[in-house]
Amino acid sequence: MSLVVVGSMAFDAIETPFGKSDKIIGGAGTYIAWCASNYTPVKQISVVGGDFPQAELDALTARNVDLEGVQIKKDGKTFFWSGRYHMDMNTRDTLETQLNVLGDFEPVVPESYQDAEFLMLGNLAPSVQRSVIEQLKTRPKLIVMDTMNFWMEIAMDDLKQTISMVDLLMVNDSEARELTGEYSLVKAAAAILKMGPKYLIIKKGEHGALLFHGSKVFCAPALPLEEVFDPTGAGDTFAGGFIGHLAKTKNISFENMKTAIIVGSAMASFCVEKFGTERLREITKADIDERLAEFVQLANFNIELG
Ligand code: AMP
Picture 1 (cartoon, rainbow, N blue to C red):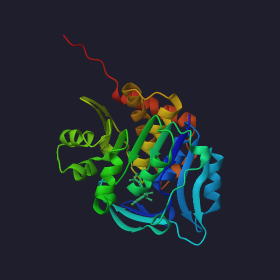
Picture 2 (cartoon, rainbow, N blue to C red):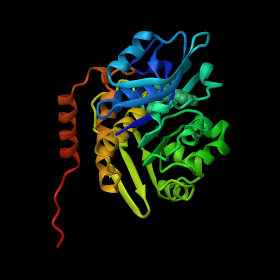
Picture 3 (cartoon, rainbow, N blue to C red):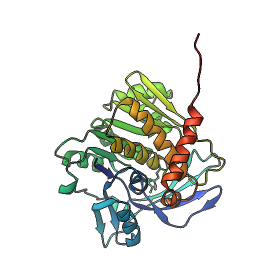
């Protein structure tokens, strides 16, 4: 049941039409760990600077997140990202990316992580993601990869090489278009499935997510929320719920992936309700179950074909 997660651990500064945050804790790996640890223990790989609060690391340890693979560069600064959302909250501009300790990060996979059955490659330099795959002596049952437009712009060849090595890629709709040059998501999906992965998830923000596998497609809704406070980390939280469910159930069938997408969508719907990781820290099992029941209602219908 072991899950290894790789991803940035960061400071973020976020502006939305509803407010502005100071430097808060963020990072793809952080969101994935907070979310996936609801389902299964996590073995984390990342890097932070000496400025990253020890209390944050302790909070993750208390959630059963193993931090042996997280390097602490005492004299370095933690990765910093800032972004501004537009009124529709589906589009955002990156205002600043300071790679800091992430710039020359060389991950080292601890011996105790070697038995990993599931590998979640959260958003990071594709060469770093690839290095983790290459260090694992036995190939995990499932390798899932997330990425973002930033890497398409500065490291496309590297990115395509890593994509060719994974089982499932998850990107958002604009990233799928940027990666393939195809506007139609169906054509973009076909092009991405030719790059190597057997499965593809295209996230469409408030419009849900699509899962592609061969000629099969599954469509999961997003919960219509009255208020989206801060979408940062929604994609990573989705990833954490998706892989967390698969790792917990140890079943990587297409049918179980459909359930995993709903779990990911339900967890992402919590993430956006408050700034940063705040909401993910406070939700309980009862909250999650209630939200999953809402999803069942949302997408369930009967039709008589005659
Ligand atoms: P999401 O909203 O799911 O796309 O993820 C947002 C998180 O990704 C933020 O917490 C950022 O710290 C992190 N992030 C943004 N840009 C990068 C990057 N180039 N590499 C790694 N992590 C990033």
